[in-house]
Structure formats: structure tokens, C-alpha cells
Length: 148
Image 1 (cartoon, rainbow, N blue to C red):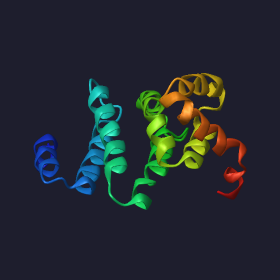
Image 2 (image 1 turned 90 degrees about the horizontal axis):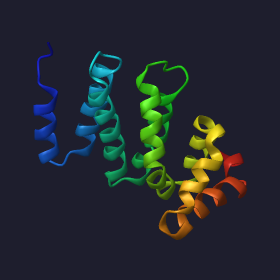
Image 3 (image 1 turned 90 degrees about the vertical axis):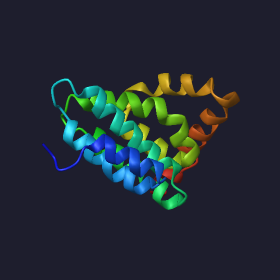
């Protein structure tokens, strides 16, 4: 048993609106619950909330840290059973990631979901009058990916 109750500490840190403190604790929550029996929902919750913490931070460069974090947790090196659930969460959050940085999001899709590209584009076309799909496709064909 740890020396603190994660959920209680998180509640306190969230009330204080310390996104980076919450991020640290949610990442710890992912690590503690990864591949634990009956903990997949909790693990997914912490992963999803980690993404939230990145996206709501005031510092744009810090927000972009979501991309390497997501890649690390979903990488092929991470053979956890939670990895497939994490990928589902990333797909759900993809429009937000595209709005944050379309080029980084396109790179993420290219590395994680290359076989699902047509499905992803189809779902993006239905969002925000096609603006999300446009931003994504612009990032793909603009040549900006080559500069990363």
C-alpha cells in the first residue's frame, strides 16, 4: 500500500487547479494500474486525464508535450494490454490534438494508425464542418512533416 491515497490527493490538487501536479499524479496512476487485474478502467481514466492536463495547460510548448507522452504510452515497445485501449482514447481525442498542432498529430497518426487512415479521415470530415480534416490533410501534404 502506498503512503497516500492517489484519488484523495488528486482531488486536492485538482481543486487547487495545479494541472502539472495533476499530470504527475495521473501519470503515476497509469503506471500503478497498468496491466493490473480489474484496473483497466482506472488506467484508461488516468491516461485520458493525463491528456487533459497537457491540453489545458497555459503554456503552448508544454501542451505539445502530449505528443511524445502519447507515443510513449502507445508505442509497440509498450506491450501492455492497456495499449490498445490507449490507442482508442487517442483516436477519440484526435480532433483536439489536431487543433493543438496538426503536424504533430499527423505524425502521430502516421506512426500509430497508418492502417486506419481512411477511417480517420472519414470521421474527421464530419467534425467542425470539415475544418479538422482540412487541417489534418494540409499538415500531411504541405511538406511540414519532412521538417520534423
